[in-house]
Length: 627
Image 1 (cartoon, rainbow, N blue to C red):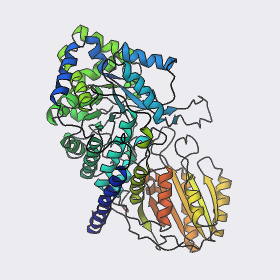
Image 2 (image 1 turned 90 degrees about the horizontal axis):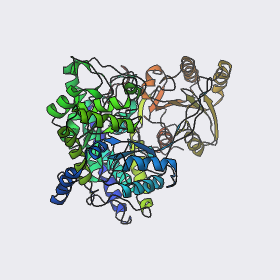
Image 3 (image 1 turned 135 degrees about the horizontal axis):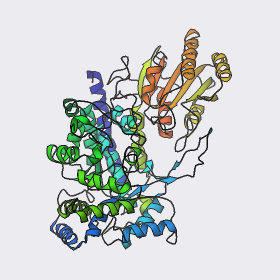
Image 4 (image 1 turned 90 degrees about the vertical axis):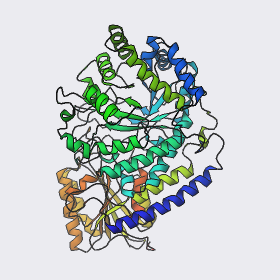
């Protein structure tokens, strides 16, 4: 970064150190079950008692029990009666199939499978107490403690209502503060352990160097491999300090693809030299930092296996040779979800599970049919395709992970004290700090930021969406509009999308000049599952026209990007542009605080956005006393 950016980041880090002291002070007043920093640090090696438990447990296991340890089915964190079919099914997996762990999801809404108007979102947040209650019951009947994992990329709140939700990883890249990354990891670990989760399927260390990436995008720390590795290492340290296993994903790199492996099988054709110098750098940094697990990607890399190109999920050359031998990683190797179409379009659940184990995986995650996966691996062992020594190696790693977590001593959590550790004000304050420091001012012609307008001003707020359907966990402008109305008495809010008729768009354009200022919130999701990850051409043309009209009339015009930051390449001519890298209410509030001058703007791009906005770019603004 330029010299001024380095100085700026240094100041941010200094504040981060101060914040650590504040958070630590608050934490001393939390009740006993709040996970303390030192008491929960994961040991690098096992004490004699734990080591003996691993060896004795492995020696007593039958082949079926060993096979089951490799499987990790999932459940939803909703109230589950002990007298229900859902509970009975989970009990069967634990007792009869001896599964080694469970994957915790949030919740799922029913969605009608209709044509023409498929506007309903499926995902919903689960409940921490429901998850903890169910896990306690299942742990109590497991002959070997369950290793519980979850995808808490942005904290517990990513899946659980009431948990702390941090901004997307790219916001950490924009904030540029390793201390904040560490604190996010620590807090995520404390809240996860409070509900009975032991391993986080994070951090994402894919280097997002493809603007059209529909599945990684803001989940990545950025496009600079060194910065990605440094932030990931800090986050890993935070997770482990809080007692949680950390997972690097998606090996050997998912950042340069324009296909979502949930929907198809990506192919990346880079040379081995390029992979070594870009994609693998953050994985090396994470392994050097002592990461506990690595998740592979459902991606074909011919340069890494030229003889028989196949997904890394099934590749012994990528898992056994590159990851195990070349990178010298001896922790847990986990598949990505085996329900993704990149896998299910190729093989049956049983065949896919066998191929993953043969490639070198220790954990087969989220199979579409865990019972068939069990049967497939069991048959492969009987045939001799998977020898028992190979099976024992994976089971030994899994048991070692459980012993490092202390699960052989205690595997259940307290429901009474869980609320003292999850979603606390101190934790939320760290998330707020990350969000506010990530806001990046890309362009400000005429220095309109901070937006200095009298409280009685008439402000037009345009909420511009990629499409009106599928909004579930976040709602466009739900926080922007009330925050704007806290500053200005008269705010007219209008929502536009690709479904808005041309006549209505034209009416808005014609009347926009009547206002004292125009503020635009642009909401574009990064995933392309429901449509394109950008704006429709009519909306792009509309924004350009309104901004030109505003310039002619000397009317302030400010646009804020929520979600996919790469959309800015379509809107470079707009006079004032801010980026937030997220869609949440937290990001929305941070944006309004920035554009009104209530908070300083210090974010720097962790990616390049065309030729006009290079890596590290970001205009700085101090706070203002303006209304």
